[in-house]
Image (cartoon, rainbow, N blue to C red; front, side):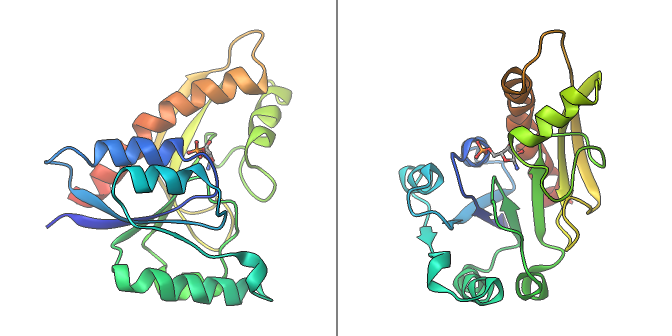
Length: 194
Ligand code: GRF
């Protein structure tokens, strides 16, 4: 039986696309059951629709608390019975309401070699700027379990890339992203086979 995977994404969803593509293979041990976004215009939702996967959105502005939003999200997700929830560029910090329902089933991809360059505020271009500022010689990507402390869950898989002379946050981000697109499907495959 294939494992059932739900995705939470806020933006472009290139990692989502890499996973949707990988899941097309008949022998891939997981299938996409839902893509959720907190942004109605997220390209990730369009990617889901094009792939024939359920695409759902809730507007955070309609909820007075973050917990309330997450409770609604849990109620939306539960009927899909996800074995695994992949965060793919999801820009909201999850609350206890979400962890109470799904702790141990949530994974994320981070564009650096955790535990370095992780934690609150370390997202998007901030990560690559910090790596360059620190003079690090390499960076990479990390797939990890999601726990309440941001970017602190057990590491599942990592890929490394060199930091090259003349790198900008953009060139480094692109080199890391290319690896992310291989790493995330590999990690999901490994988890779903075990
Ligand atoms: C990726 O760099 C990922 O590591 C981070 O958010 C970015 C999402 O990019 N968590 P995309 O939406 O998958 O293109």
